Image (cartoon, rainbow, N blue to C red):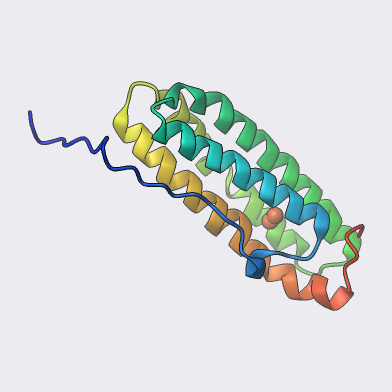
Length: 151
Ligand SMILES: [Fe+2]
Ligand SMILES: [Fe+2]
């Protein structure tokens, strides 16, 4: 007793914002990333507003959108002739376990404070580090290609 201090009065607004350096200048993919960021921000808001029970559906939507995005991105990269498409595909595949964890945290978020904290942290890092930052690997390739947004 007393060891677990709740910090319900401390609102950590950890909103995600995609600054221009994170934009790929590849309209379809940038739109997807923004959409994923929007969902993450809804999850953060639900947690801040004591509406954690909304997280399960939101995170399920996030995972579904992320998987659809990965498939779309892989297809676009293949079509554009990106040489490391296999490696990027493997990276996406390696994220499945993390996405399972996110779904689990979201499911427990209604009753469990540790799940809420983990969800908030892991989801933001997942988006920024594993989804968006790793895409910087092919940014130069796309820029050199002259993009145009339609592959
Ligand atoms: Fe992406
Ligand atoms: Fe990616």
